[in-house]
Image 1: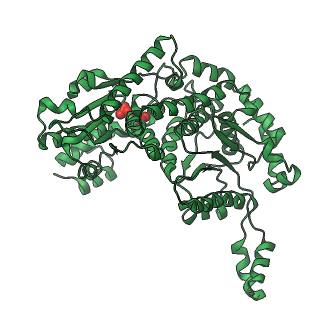
Image 2: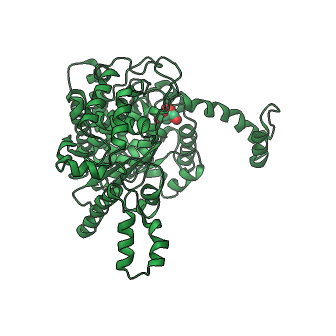
Image 3: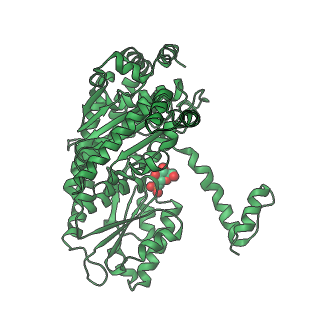
Length: 531
Ligand code: F6P
């Protein structure tokens, strides 16, 4: 632990958020900023100028400045896999570099395909135009495109429906296919590795569904395209070479929605809107790359997360978008943040002597208010919150939108102010309760307050502002990893369960267990075996 930050935390723990606001009435002006169409109010956090200055100095000591340069310069920031993490290159305007040529050639290929679908020139095996796209992918090959497609539903092209299938549970595929016609459906097999169990099995079943629906082997190419770095595996699956969209090993799965993995987005909302999404992210890239730490939105957000996790003992962070169409943002951020920061060794492979990563969770407001907000308000743990509010209504029900925004602001106010015993007693007295009843009930109505939150405001939920919002969180995660000294771009932890699942699959099929397996594994296989 950093002794300077320890001292700052000790000092601020003796104060309170309401006190900080009283001391400095212009606090929100000091602790808010704008970048890439986002207004970020972080004034409701346990910081003051002195603490922020120490936090920024800590970031300097951790080498964040150089690490940001390394990220954008394409250094091997993913040191275990010895490769760069150049998702920012996917959003850069066209330049003369070889990487830019590759990126823009892929964008042109996407545009060509999207236009053929939208102009109804891409026909299925009976000559009918395609009206449905099914993206088969999981993790980074699903969560980002699914979240963005949902978020931008106001921009949807109405001649095409886009569906997503991820789970190996056949019910996911079956429920989707039951709505579709094989003659007019195209499947996108989205897999960076093209080895992922869920995706390959769903792809095989989808192919069989097409064949069963009357498509010949020779016409399958009209219904299957792939996005992968593993061209040979995609070809072996039977994907026509022209139907394979490239991806590169310097794009991490959970950072890949900006690449051809974003094809379902482009199909849903058009290529121009996809370009706007990239532009929004690019604006945030420039901000993250160039702004001083004290004015740098992703850096500040990362510092606050670090501050709370290591000096205030928080173990989770809630993301609460007060926008129905951002309902999939928390799920997307779970992979982005937790797969990146859930590590137990430093970049050099040494055991890490501090907590890494926190649990990211949340749901769309106001639904969460009638569910888990009780824990935020009166639970004993401190859980920092990101509220996300969008000024422009996404429906014609403008008064409901005002209610929505009022709820959002009201929740953050409640977290900040809480309710004292005295206030609770006064309220009960005003309701005409007798003193014995007031004494009995008042302690239950006390809300400690002093709970931190930040509010992110978008003027409107547009491709551009959404691009900036996603890039903000991507860079926050990278900055957090640098503060911890860990690699944000690998995910070795997910491999073991995959390896162990293989022999268990065979045991479920054969009914024969390895006698060396533990008794719980054997009992579960016996209970669940299908032979
Ligand atoms: O579950 C781990 C993981 O490798 C994720 O990091 C990735 O996004 C997902 O699987 C899907 O991988 P692929 O795109 O290679 O199918």
